[in-house]
Amino acid sequence: MNLGLTGKRALVTGSSAGIGAGIVAQLAQEGAIVCVHGRDAERAEAVAAAIRDQGGNASVVLGDLTTDDGAEAVARSTLAAFGTIDILVNATGGTGDNTFTWDTTSPAQWAEQYELNTLSAVRMIRHCIPAMTKAGWGRIIQIGSIASATPLPHQVPAYCASKAALPVLAVSLARSLAGTGITINTVTSGYVETPLLKSYANDMSGGRPWDEVAPEMVSALGIAAGRFGRPSDLAALVAFLASPVADWINGSNIRIDGGQCAFTN
Image 1 (cartoon, rainbow, N blue to C red):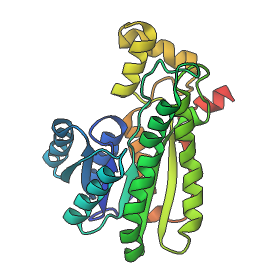
Image 2 (cartoon, rainbow, N blue to C red):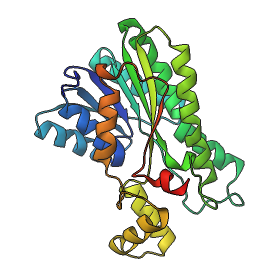
Image 3 (tube, rainbow, N blue to C red):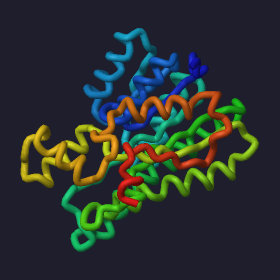
């Protein structure tokens, strides 16, 4: 299927590694002109260079989205380079300290998680909407987490709650942007094999090798597909949602978790 993404200009936040890197590479493969975002110049440039090596068009923008000034600088730099932003994928996020519990997470740490997982997306949306509205077309895609559907009972409560805000945000914004040609959707991701997941597994297992821990985790989590997800699994769905052919999908929360919620529910 031709997704019609050739020449579309896409900014993927948090795309210097993990899920975001998979998404930005997929969009470039579909013909989009992409901007790789991160806070580490070396990692972001490595992702962009790999895209260019495959014949894609990629640039890099750096900045901290947990501050108003940082998010504005990222948006301004991207708009200056691209002229507009057709597609915004908010993939920035993180759990913070994997040992955080209800007892040990302070209000300040809760606020930090909302800055990273929720307000970073809000900031970028606010900066990108004017250009999309002017163009009469746009796609905004949030990368959520299965932790919002099946919160962990004893760990990272602030992460779970801050990610849970994204689907509600998307519905509200979809209604607000009715008639503009802009759609916003959430992709709620299950457990994907990324450096973040491996770090979490390392912390929780006392440093056991990933190859030993991963099959046990898949079984314990009840992932019906029998494996963790790959960034490419999410990237294919995001590319479809970013395309003109998906214009009737709006305000939706699409879960992609290998059947985990089907098993646990």
